[in-house]
Length: 63
Image (cartoon, rainbow, N blue to C red; front, side, top):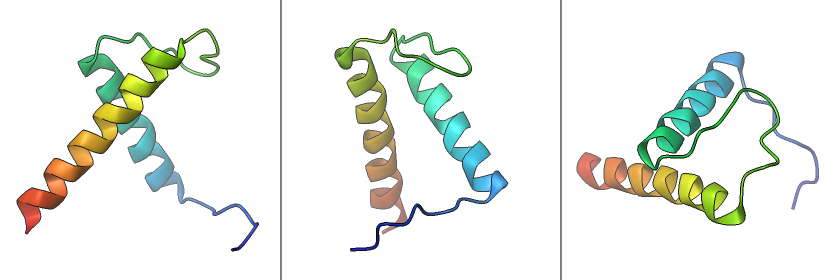
């Protein structure tokens, strides 16, 4: 397993950021730019879960 960090293009980084912000809004979590260390584990998990749900739906629709 490689230990180096993968580099994302600025476009990919921006797309992921927008996707995260959109997902947070959908589940009712208020994210701010920069550090969000005040989020609970439940809030952070709900954002990640929403992102995965949307990615799975998109993959299923493309089959």
